[in-house]
Amino acid sequence: MSNITTSILTTAKEQLDQSINQANQVYTQLDNKSKDINDKVFGRKFKPKFTQTIYCMNYLDDNNQYRTVSYNTNTLDSTLIAYKNAGIEGISIPIHIGYRSDTNTLYYQTNLTTIDYVISKCNQLGIPVFFMKFHEGYTIDNVFAMGIDAFKTKFKAMVQEVCDRYKNNGIQYLGLFNEWQNFYKVNGVTYNSVVYDFVPFVLECFNIAKNDGFKVSVSCAGVSADGWSSWIIVDDTVKNACDIFMVNGYPPIGNKGQYTTMQDCLDGWNNYGLHNVIRQIRQQYGGKPVIMSETGIMDYWYNFFVPGDSSLRYGILSNGETGYRYLYGLFESLKQYDTDTLLAVNWWYDSTFTTYTDKMKPLISSYLKGGIN
Image (cartoon, rainbow, N blue to C red; front, side, top):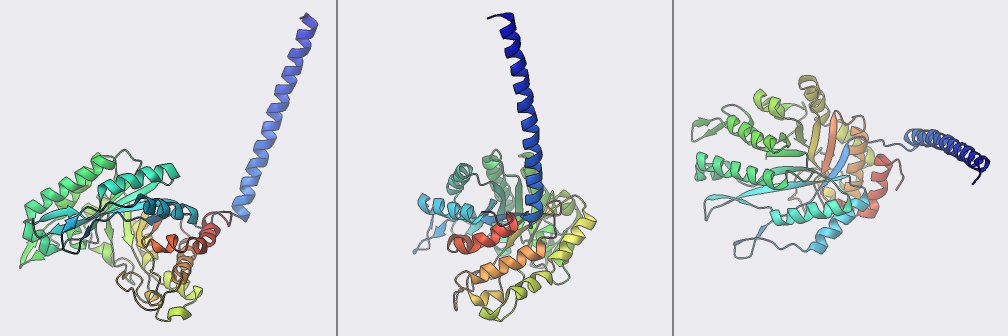
């Protein structure tokens, strides 16, 4: 090949490279403009992550015997696929802990082997497991029946086992002592006229989880009209040790049943104390976000009156309308918060997004994806 030919080819290649670079720059500019337009016109209106609980429970059989449930993986698969299709952005997994009177000890009401499968399936589907939460199924009477020291030893061992088992699965957050407010306050437990302090025990459990890389929180219930009552009784040492603040809340909407409107649901959410909780947490513990770790409603019209009572399973089914209207109120009321303030909102009832996936998907898409499916 002559020098002239080589020179021509070199020049042509340089010009081609320059043209490609210019084209890439134009493409990048257009792509950025497209994203800007999409954010402005079709952008995400609800900033917090929207997650959903999946249950992996053991049960008592007809003879009141404890047994491990062999879950149907097809059911788990279809549930997770329905969540993904509905637009759910992450999964939460409760670790239910119960009490066995026959052995006078704690046991897992949750099937850890099933959790292993769920995490593996979530990885396949690209659904992050956002947080786990210990969910107590024992009573204070059970604690004292075991003996305080035996209870603490057993519970800490279970926390250690769960943390060691799941620390390398990309799960960031762990909630402990769900709705056990008396554990969070110095000298908060009185039993048979004797005062007990469980705060050091709570902090020990925190440290177990933190040593395995989890960010931790207790999980408070009973957000009242003043918005702060459930957190007032949490000792400052516990609050300061929390990396996040988990709050459970089920805003009551009213007793209009099937005549409950979308506006009624928005009003119920707006008038609920959660906004005061978020505001005061931010004022007193700046930099620590809130996770609303439980909310939702079941599929009976009566549930608008007491959404948080899962035992109210009677009356007329709404065919997804309670969930749809309640979720609208949630999205509209809480869309004012960014993720630095409200990190995530977790829906507690599973049937909303498995039975009524097609109904919920457009609403979820309109708030999380600007209506783009």
